[in-house]
Length: 83
Image (cartoon, rainbow, N blue to C red):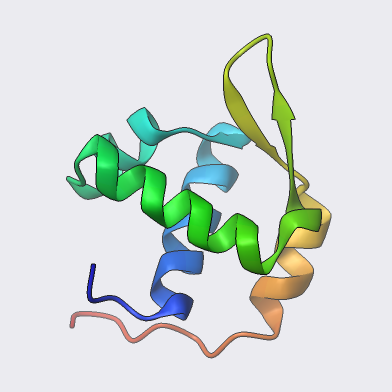
């Protein structure tokens, strides 16, 4: 994947805000990623910010800690619109 970390993080935040959690399936559906790419993206974000997510074994999803996500998101540069 050639996207930088801010883009990865923004994608994960977008999914978390919409669904309240992050899954490979949700990333695949929202961004057209493969399951492998989605796993890599989740892993990258969790490696840098493990405090943002907790594993929910009942649903098989990474549950987003939305307050923590928003705090980190606010410190990142805003993405440019329209490419």
